[in-house]
Amino acid sequence: MNKRVLWGALVSTAVLLTSGAAFSGGTTTSDVQLMDFVESTQRLWAYPRSGALTEFQHTRATIHLPGVFRGAHPPDPCDGITRAWNNIVRIDERRHIETTRVFLVLLDQMARFQCNATVTSTDGASPAPIVSIAPVP
Image 1 (cartoon, one colour):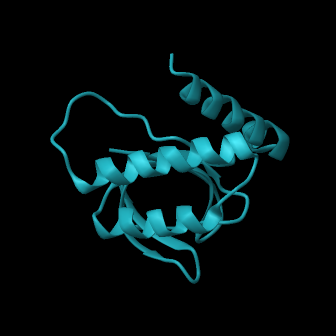
Image 2 (image 1 turned 120 degrees about the vertical axis):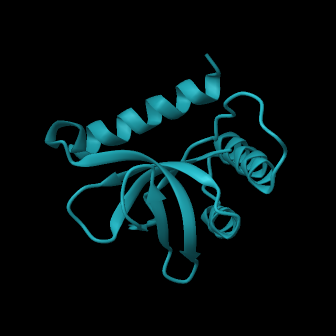
């Protein structure tokens, strides 16, 4: 298993356990198609695979996980955006920093090209706060 994927899973689990959400059933993970992102408010709109347009809220606590490439696919803009996203995740991990501004720009591009992502969000709020997000090319 890829070390980054394992590390991302461990970080997500730690966040869920420390927040108490893992015990309250308070999160939902969905594969979504991004439709719009407003950088100034950090609001994201996306279609889950089975459901209506959903509004999410990116926060300072949002964890940016590396994207996982799933098999062969033709090149598209989402592939390049995911590679850039993964490079920033690696840089942040090495330097122990969080370059949120870069992720906001990449989210805007992902929405512009209607890329896919896996989003874990907190239940019960509207817009739903994003716990973690990872591109899925």
